[in-house]
Length: 453
Length: 104
Image: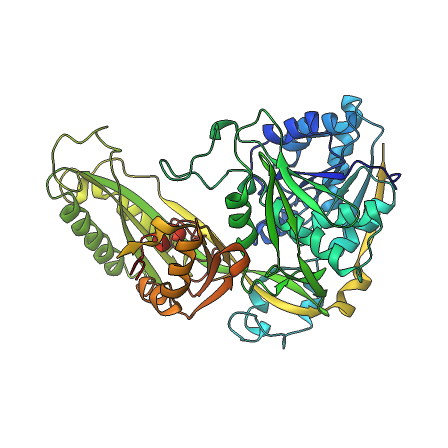
């Protein structure tokens, strides 16, 4: 779409999870001279959770923070001609796009042309595939089918490119692979094809480095005295400058906190990777064993030598299923014998739960703490304080509720000096497993819907 | 003996019930020691109190880094775990405490 120019394509990272910080993304859109800004907001089980929201209310099912983010970012992005790619559609990309357009109309932002990518939801398809094997355990999918709430294929960059090819300024997807959000911008901009391995490799490596946003620019890195990060509080989000031949650099805005150097880039490159010679995405099998990095200027690292092999003939599919409940409670003890009293408390709670007839498949006791109770140590008991945390898994909601109930009741009914008991917590567990599904079964379901306002 | 923390930095990531932890040498001398001493068996031992599966080590000599893939390390996986740190993001700090023999 964009005319060839000497300036490299610039792709910014706007989020690494649904609750990521927003201000640095606005800053990047405002001053970054970006072509694209991508927001990765779907953890493994997010789509499963949002699928449940959509079943309760068809207008929901997108990432809950969608509008917090878009209200701040969209006007700035449109003003500067920055296109947005995001998976914040979660289980309902159409509802997400409609909501963004409602906002654009009411605020006089626009004109806006968007595309929603549909087809990752293959829940119905998998119900007819009980024989598929779960990737981790090898057990048949059949075991989970009665409790399955969603099944979403990790789609690749090609479907986002189809969205961008409509001329859309905003492309909203459900489940796509994280690096694909970024690779798609480069494939669309430069017209790269899937058999152009070196470039697909470069775009995927760039996407992998950007997908966790600040984790490549100084986030999740600092350790006092050992690994210093300048102005961590004002950490800037990263961007990539990508040339047509796949040569690229990672950088961040001047006057922002953080650092981009070999150490931060290496940590992010290897992050969530298993075999570095075979990092499987829907777009390729990436090999980073020959990858080289060079610091070309302060806060700018040049990346070369990523390689790739053809993509596999399957999609990885995340299957979300209900898996009982987790109940949790906490309470603190201080001073002499703090640990002994916490341990006594833990045994008392377990006895009371057993006496009530509750059953748990797993129960965990944690002892936490340094200085939460009395600000600083007033006695040399070691540790001076401890916070007891009890968490247990069960298929019975009442048994889950009892964990936190009995822990809080220790205030009066447990060892001496228990304080700060937490409100009981009960979580319905949405677990996920992965299966592989042949491409031929998923691809016919993929469609693009356009919206204009 | 020397701690991994004195030679390297690293980060932990998660996929399902599997943790991967990078160990990235600060320099060439550290890389030589880590490559020789920080074996799968050493890491397996350090994580034996809760990791149920095998440990696989991958080498990235150009980056002077190791990548350890530790199966069964996340209490059934991020979405099921009873742990406070269900993602195991803090597991890199356990890796950093491992002691290995220094330069010979």
